[in-house]
Image (tube, rainbow over all chains, first blue to last red; front, top):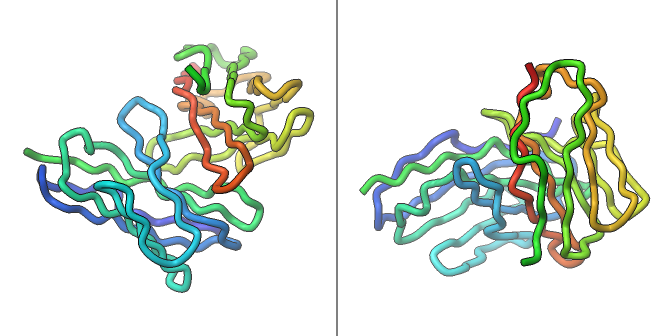
Length: 109
Length: 113
């Protein structure tokens, strides 16, 4: 079966750095997405990786290793507004997105 | 402002009733999707449409139907609601070009009693 694994919850301190991991086992791979979802709101797109390596976008970076079935989202200079759930999703061989359950990130002052 | 709208925002429904959740996008995206999101689970695809006039089944299609008469609208119908369909429903769309990023509507919170 297809599976996306992420930690359920993480806690970090304002101003610090946090890394959210995602491992996947899917039938085929056509890209990995990270979305941010604030409580009670819709998911919003953060990043996309299809080749191995690091993609940097401001305070957020995303890394992919296809051989290891692994990705991480790195958030730097954490702000209180970064408190949200972070969803990892993989596009499979049918070009459908398979979603992880999300990681709830709690930022403490 | 371009985007996706969903209606209603929330609804409480008696079991056995018929309900249609509405979704409209003005980005001229070809593909549209319906997901449900339940606590502790990832988003699960119910139905999708790659282009107007075509639809397909996702991971959890039972009890739901969709239609895609035009590019902009993608309604989701529950023919006879059951309590297990209590969930938050998100509509999304993508342009099927490049990264094919999906953009989400604000969601409909549905409670079936």
